[in-house]
Image 1 (cartoon, rainbow, N blue to C red):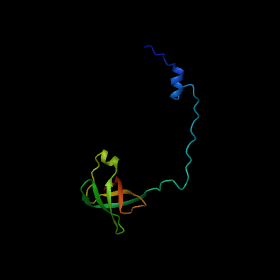
Image 2: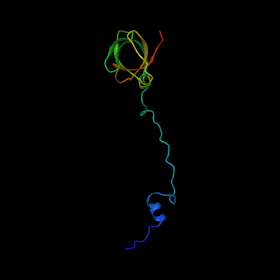
Image 3: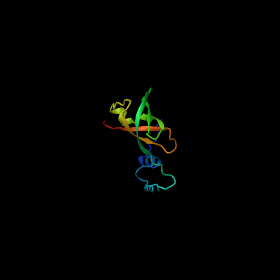
Amino acid sequence: MNRPKRSNQRSNARRGGADQKRTPRPAPQESTDTLKEEPIKIDGVVTQLLPGTMFKVDLGNGHEVLAHISGKMRKHFIRIMVGDRVSMEMTPYDMTKARITYRHKN
C-alpha cells in the first residue's frame, strides 16, 4: 500500500515551526513582597567538630550555632579546625543553623 507523503509545511506548523510567528514573553516583574530575605552575615569561632562536616560555632555573645561548610569550601578542600575564626551566613528564619563561607587566616 502506498501512503501519501506528509508535507513539511503541515508538520512544521503542528510543531510550532518557522511559519508561525512567535512573540517574546514579557519579563517577570519583581515585587517587593516576593523577594527572598538576605542572609545575616556573622563571625564566630569553631568550638567543636561534628560528623558530616558539621561544626558547633560560638558567636561571641553567648550563643552557639550548628554550622556546615558551603559547597565552594568543600570543593576546594578547605580544612576547618577547632579554634578557627570563620564567617557565616544565617537565615533569618532559623537562628540556630548557619553556613560557613570563609575561614579567616590566624
